[in-house]
Image 1 (cartoon, rainbow, N blue to C red):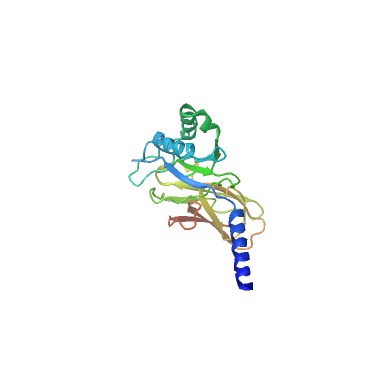
Image 2 (cartoon, rainbow, N blue to C red; image 1 turned 90 degrees about the vertical axis):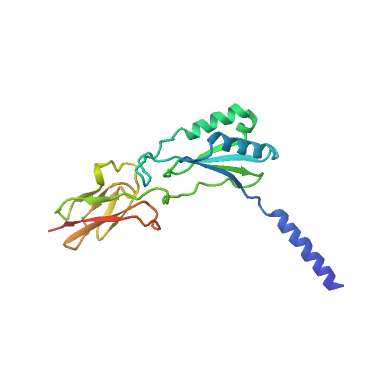
Amino acid sequence: MRKLALLIFLLVLSLQVLAQEKPQPILVGEYVDKKNSPALTSKIEEFLSTLSKEPNTTKGVVISYRGFPIYQDCDGNPNVPNSDVEDRTKQYLVSQSRSLADRTTFILGTDRLRSTLEFWLVPENATPPKPTYVDSDPGWCCREFSVIGPTTNRRKSTAKFMVKLEGNESAKGIHFRWTLSEGRIIRGQGTSEIIVDLSKTKGPAITAMAAFGLDPAASCPEASFTTKIP
């Protein structure tokens, strides 16, 4: 009898715990702006159709990742700049259903190689989704580049190192990871140009190395430059 009572107690307790579990947001669709992508409007319509079948307490969230026009694919075709993807989505939502548009919130994520939209459902009491960072993209090629800097530099000063892309293309907007043999990066980490503090260096030279992209897992080339410090 005691065992039966204990089993019933544990069953009731388990049901209460399950009932108290917080609901989670649900990813219901994604649009990536690239060749052969489904039409943006069809993705929006799928999202609206799904949201319309949910209770009014369920909200919609669209996370927008804007693309870099500087990147090229492996055939040399430039990425089509689509900073207006988010605006077109908002306009289409309103044109199709004002009430569903009012239930939808837009969140701006970090830049990606291609403009991307994520469509989410957020049930009542669920925590809204957060943007994720993705830097490597197998559909786009790494770029060949070199690092340039001063040949020699005084120890109690700063030095500038910068990336030079092959073909004299602009490196603006492309992410680079920088590492130093000595010294301290004052500013520019993650960009194509850094300023380095040399005041606490001890060796006869400093080497600045840049890696393409912010994702350490990406197998893109690296380049470096060494500055002598007499």
